[in-house]
Image 1 (cartoon, rainbow, N blue to C red):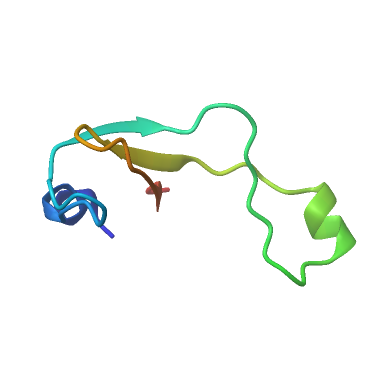
Image 2 (cartoon, rainbow, N blue to C red):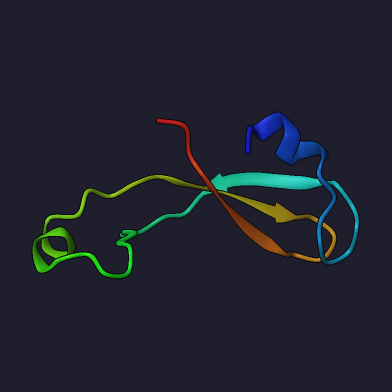
Amino acid sequence: MERTKAERTPCPICGKADYEWGVLSGQHNYVADGSGVLARIFVVPKSIETRRCRLCGNLQLFKANP
């Protein structure tokens, strides 16, 4: 989902569309189920954008553009 569309999409919890954007901090890696042992060991960290609803605090995750 491109960010401009995500900015207009209402929060699924409260229905408002007032967000604060950020990025998950710390070490986070995504490895698909069924991946081999080497894929789990040599995983490359990926950025994950987040948006937090300013009204209810709902946090949603988005794939960051490469």
